[in-house]
Image (tube, rainbow, N blue to C red; front, top):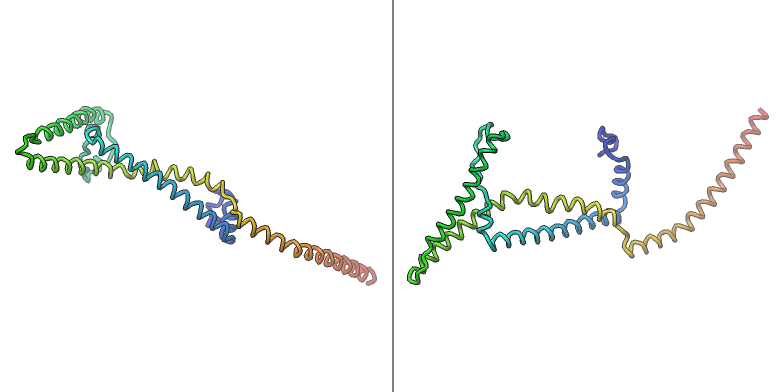
Amino acid sequence: KLEGSPNANLFSPLYPKHAKLIKQNLMIKHAVWQTYDQTCKRQLAQFVELFENMLTSTFSNPWVFLKGATTIPAISGDLEDAMLPSFDDTKNRIPREIESRSGNEVAISHWLTKIPAEPHEIDQAVDKVQILVLHTYSFIRSQVCDQVELFSESFFKLPMMRRLEEDMAKIELTPEDKANYEARRQRLEPEIKTAEESLVEIDWCLDRLQGFKLKCDARG
């Protein structure tokens, strides 16, 4: 709750008013949640499609992905390894990464050359191809799992937050809700007119009582 809290001054004063209005009006609450669900569903479909396209492009030519990948060393529990690397460490790391990437390419080429191509060695070739596919799949899976959090933050959460504000600003009443509110307004118009007439009579009575009180005070 922002109202009455120290953090109330950090936000717009309209937030508590809008929150009370949403809680009191079921139609507004339904429209807000419906827009939120539609936005999340749309962004999820776009994210899944984009993620599937990324996986399709990766597995259609996995050698390009393996050539560009860098093997990440195991992280120890020392605090020195958790610190940001210095400029010299970064400069020394670049040749090692280039060598590591070229080493992956050499290893892949070595695995491919070991696959026999003779017809009588077809069983061995199938086994070696299966082993190569399993190695390739496990490596790509590890790389994708390491990047999936960043991928979801960049291509799902941030676009959803931008689109959500835009969709919330475009909320409109449905024709059924408009018809219900119009009927309610027509029902309330006679009541408002009756209340206004009653208010005029009450004001007239108050004026008479006030005048009578003044006369009594003057005689006393």
